[in-house]
Length: 147
Image 1 (tube, rainbow, N blue to C red):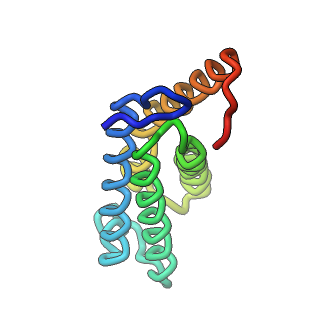
Image 2 (image 1 turned 45 degrees about the vertical axis):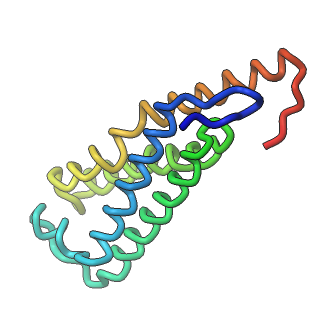
C-alpha cells in the first residue's frame, strides 16, 4: 500500500486518510446532487430558490473526492491536491461563520462543517507536514526534486 516518493515510502496512514476523504466526498457530493434540499430541510433553513447551485457544490465536492483518491496513490508526491483540499476546508468554515453572523445560516447547518471540513484539518495538515519533511530530507541529501 505504501508508495515511493523521492526514494522512500509514503506513510500508510496518509494513503488511508486520502482514500477515506475521497470516498466521503464522492458520497456526500452524490447525496447533494440527488437530494439538494435534504440538508436545508433537516436544519430548518429555507430551501434555496435555485437548488442547482447547491447541486453544483455537490459536484465540486465530489470532484475533490476524485482528486483525493488519486492523491492517495502517493500522498507525499501529490501534496498540492492535499493543500488545495485543506484550503477549501479552511475557507468553507470561514464563509459559514460570515453567513452565521449575517443571519443567513442557522448554527445547526454548521454540523455539516464538522464532517466535511473540521474533521480533515489535522490529517491533511499532517500530510502536508510529512511532505515538507520529505522534501527537506531530499534537499539535504542532494536529491533532484521533481514533482
